[in-house]
Length: 454
Image (cartoon, rainbow, N blue to C red; front, top):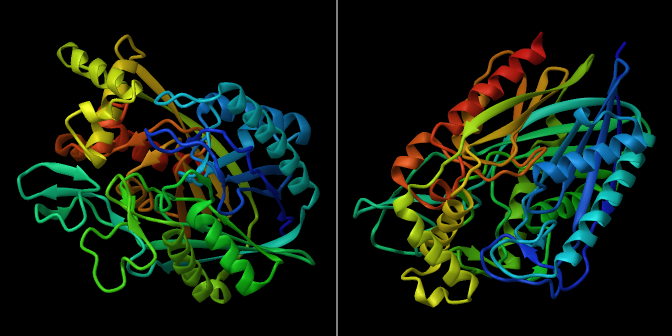
């Protein structure tokens, strides 16, 4: 008989007002709250091994800070740092844990909040471990409804490539990529306790565009499911491969523009948009919640693989213009840079990438995390992978379900596919990695899945 156990806990992680809001290259400072930020943890125990899965509402936790948090969690729980799967929802209306380099902020405030966040994650983890109870696990795949997600990179009729082109631009030709509309759902039922629903879907949590703090669509998904299923049903949103996926329909029709507006970067954003996306995704979970297939869990495991990727160092001839754009941006003179909207964001991000890599580093090490719960597996990637990375990893054989997760155990930027570097666009031009990073991560993801079977 399996000795599989599950524990759950959640805590509020709201920041102080005035802190820098992470997510864009424009200054934002928290002026209030749309809704609360949350961190949640699920402890798993089987065969004498304990693993912690932690889900946090924030833009991302970089690798050094992730290592620091996991070491502190190990100190208070005894769960090895290597057994912690720490994943961010990537909300673009959350507080900065480290000072943004693209606009001024109170660095001390970021440091204070980062320390507070670490204490909350340690407390959360202790509570989840203390809550361990015998449990069973079920799985099922649902499908996202229309109007929720779209590939956000487009080939234009003039041959160029744009991320988030203007709405109704007649120059738009076709999207560059294919959505993965599968929503992976896991259900964990404690004996005499809570039910924990874990959903996994690849979509940017960037639907609001404000200086007020919000958990974006993951928060709406959690609250909608709690309202429908009861307070003893808890939801965790482990976001999938979303680097090239947004919520904007570039040719809106019908009621697409209801309760939303076009933001500075050509996207459909508002609190109403977050509500729509969160409710729509919750609807899919509700459709499949009662029909999961329960499976035995007789073992759990977690492993890591280091992947070395060459840096996308700049050509020396491009550096003078890069420094000019960076200096203009930091002087508040974006109006003197000959671009607007997302094209402006693209050239500014590219300028920062070039300037930051002018003198190295010349390679990066990325930690790919594999986690096994019986015949279900997770692959955690420490950044923003394109959706095709998730598609390819899911083709690995021998698993009932594979859940690729972004921004796990690190936040180290975009992982575009090789063809994206040829086409261009914001993600590839800002990425600090040479072409081939996506393909190397697919290989590593499949390798950890193979190793978990041994």
